Image (cartoon, rainbow, N blue to C red; front, side):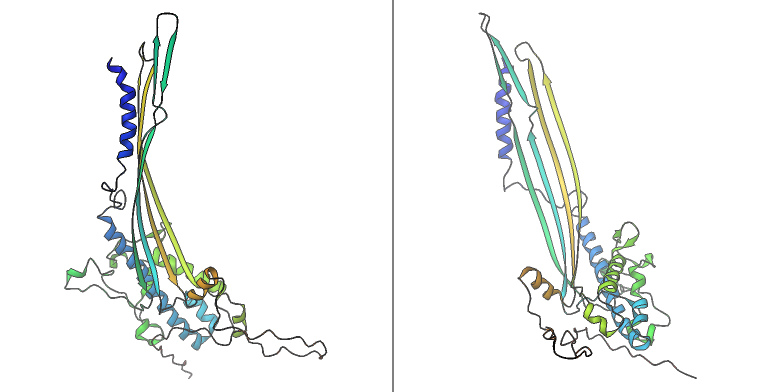
Amino acid sequence: MCVRVWPVLALAGAVCLGSCASPYFVHDPRTLIVDRQEVPRLLKSLRCELITFVAANNQRNMMFQAEAKLNGIESAIKKYSYYEIDWKQFGALELSLQVQDNLGLQSGTQFDWLRSDGNGHSHAWNIGPTGSDQNTYTATWFFAIPQDAITLRPAPAADSSEQPFSCYRTIPKREPPPFGSIYTEDDIDALARNDFPDYALFKRVWVNNTLPLAAWLEEVGKSISDSTLHGLNAQQKRDQIVPAQMQYQFNVVVTGGLDVKYDLTSPLWPAVAAEVSGSMQKTNTITIVLNGIDSQTAYLAQFNGGAGNTEAPKALPTIDVNASARGLPGYVGRRQRRGRPLWPYVVVMPPAHP
């Protein structure tokens, strides 16, 4: 007789699964891989990688301008190519942690009840209850990234209280500094490449296990600028497409689960089976946004049906069909040059001639 309670218990279990979904019982998203202890360490690593890239990129920007004045634009591109981020704007960093819990009474659950009335008639009942409970919990943090750094501050030697915040134990120096400027003395590029691994006070974020995130951002930014922005002469400025924004998103997904099944066979119950499964999926998402000088214009052009161009070109020249052949009119495209950051002035001394 006790076996007859199985269908009732199965139905009760299915109802119970639904009752587990409650706003009063939640799961901390800071679990599995990126847990509550790892979140602060990950945020520090992301902060240090990004601020290292920004400082190194802005330093290369200053050296690019100085090299172009001294030895020409081609030499500047070869030595100090950079991605033109806007020092007046902020970038953005988003860290999102999501955990999804799943618990279910699966389709493999069934109860077959066979009963004979003694008159040659038999009656069979098949009961197959199902039920599931799925809960998703997400924690998201947004941060603004200053884009005006041109150097990095080392950790105080005598004060260990700032060690959890400081990114580097010391900052390597260039000897002699390019152009003899104090603004080019710190070798931020070397820190981005991890040339001095003992200097870092944070866990580096590696891309393809070969490049730190800061150096990878530099490499990608340079390749984009060289193919879209850095022309060799003034005439090529008409052919530019202007890098407006860099956005990267990294997703790390981890899934684990367990499936349990029970079977019973008896003369009265030809088939009794119960199958319960549970799983957890953790999704970690990191989004990085870095803004160039024309990022707002690009945003309006993409999402606002077009942007008003404050540097609109002059009207296209009109072809005079009755005139004789002449040279190109004074069509110059944009009315003004795009603005450049006003970095600290790097004095460029002309080469000495004997």
